[in-house]
Amino acid sequence: MSILLDALRHRIELYFQRLGADYTENEGEYLLTRGSAAVVLYLSEFDNHVFLDFHGAIAHNIQLSSESELALYKTLLNWNVADVFGKFALVDNQVILKYRMPADELSFDTFCFVVDSVLEYADSLDEMVATLSNGQRHIDAQLSDV
Image (cartoon, rainbow, N blue to C red):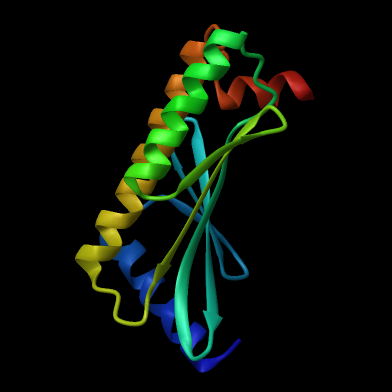
């Protein structure tokens, strides 16, 4: 791990402690949850700059009617055009969230705002998918796969 990434990891963990946040860490990857939505935060480096990379598979194995699928596509398109926190896609019966943020000079307030916003969008999207798929939430889909 580079010095830049190590410094970012240390700063992020201090921010999590300061927040009292509930997270799971595994070799520089942080699992963040809100409601039944889960988002993984990765730390990355490119060209002497560091980044926060968020990735979430918000809903798995969703079964939508044609009307519901169209409504979901429209919502995702609107969110992508509005440039909210992340880019969203419906791929192979799951909704994907991705967001990358420069973190060279990341303040505590900015970190809190971004993490809260990403998780709020993920949870809202999970709620919407549950409504469109007759109440099946991300966590329900995981249980039915076992």
